[in-house]
Image 1 (cartoon, helix red, strand yellow):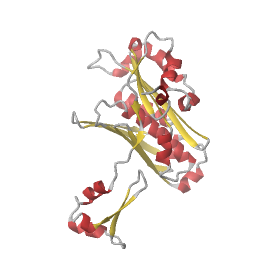
Image 2 (tube, one colour):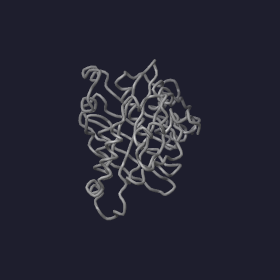
Image 3 (cartoon, one colour):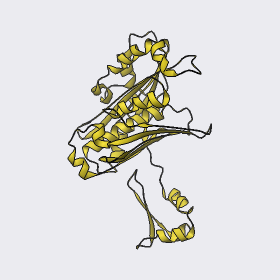
Image 4 (cartoon, one colour):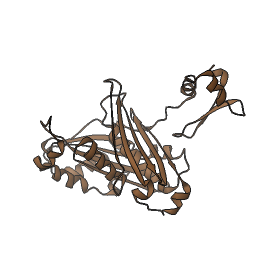
Length: 300
């Protein structure tokens, strides 16, 4: 991948062998604008989705299964946002937010995570078809930011000491978002609580301090390649290895053929009830905001 492609719409893996640490860095720009352009979200929701998509890129690009899918979902009670869904498949990102404009107007332009979601839960699901494995972790949606909520997820669900930083900004009418995820890798610790590694391995606080020094403007800077960002943070380490970058792109898997196949699974009577006044079964995609009018005879 050319050097300039390490600046935008890309995720890259990192390992620091001497510190038993691994990490990811990601940044999205044009892909983010493509996703947001399908909706007419207010700035607060655009920012939320930008950071959620960045987190999805960080987590999804960890998958070793090329057909693996990672889904991030936040469901809430009595919040301005009641549903946030993002997913990752083979470098493709998609996401949407369901919110109440009235409640959003009451909480101001810079709401806290609790103001946005109220009482909620964060669910992260990894599906890996090749190995036929599926894992889901669910934790309370807590913290001052989505990054803090993700750190809580790893501490409670994965029991892995982790650091997550996310940032987004709109400049010259375009959105940019970036993030890093660093984790301690337990060594020879099968059969024991991995949170003990925080005490057993003093190298982790060192990594967390260096990674945590990253500035929001560094995460979003479209002119700063991600490998240069990693170098800034860890240039004093004896060895820092980066892995093959993953190109990120917008992807929505809905299409007329897929929609027909879904409708065809319903009994004939139910399909007939789906037909609208215009004579079509109309299916809306929340991710890309497209509508698919399907004639009943196409699936009969």
